[in-house]
Amino acid sequence: LDSPRADAQILLEWVTGLSAVQFRLSGTRVLTPEQETQLENAVLQRLGRYPLQLIVGEAWFYGLRLEVRPGVLIPRPETEVLVSLALEKLALEKWPYGARVLDIGTGTGAIALALKSERPDLSVWATDINPEALELTRLNAEKLGLEIHMLESDLFAALSGRFQVILSNPPYLPDTDRTQRPPELETEPDSSLYSGSDGLELARKLLSQAPRFLEPGGFVLLELDPRNVDALAAEQEGWTSRICADLTGRRRFLWLERS
Image 1 (cartoon, rainbow, N blue to C red):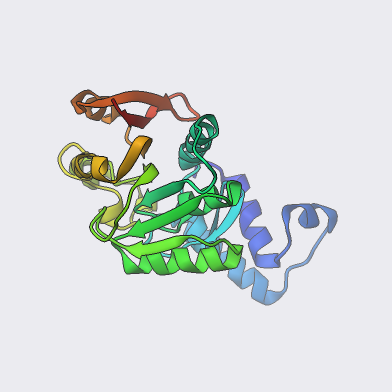
Image 2 (spheres, rainbow, N blue to C red):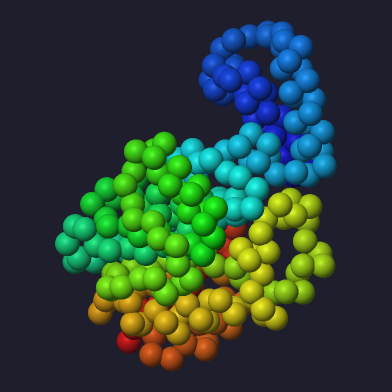
């Protein structure tokens, strides 16, 4: 495990129901027999590299606590950079309040809900082809008290109108990665991870359809694999493009605006 101490702390907080601060202030604490059993089972799951977020049933994203479930992609910390890039770009534009923002393949709703939380004025749309993902997004939106539009759709199929911003964290791993995926990815749906021989099948399809749904001056922002982001950028004609790095300095995010 990459961070056993941190994982253990999170599991203890989950079992006891105490926050990190409460846990530190409570001093020595004896677990009940039920808590001991719960903790032991959770530790065994984690040692088997079952995702920590699925053990505790939640993940933190951009300061929001989101419920997570098997079969829906767990939000990753690196995707927070996608949200930050979108917010920075939105702040520079002259668009009025209420700009329309589309999150394609929303999963838990992480990107859409983070944007709505930071910019309540935005009209945020979240779509997914997986009805279970949309149900989870709906649940997270209700828990957070955030109002967004949710729609079951294969990319743009069920959408109408235009958007100032189109965001997506699409599946971007090449199919060859299936044979060497770590145990933590075993619970993730293949449709959220893999996309053809070079990982770009769905991203290409999205970009081929995006111009019909993008307002003049609007932009598309995608999270991709550092191994293929440059290749996709080089393929695009009629777009102004820029590649941005993640927190570790890897080229991961592709920003596109119609030329």
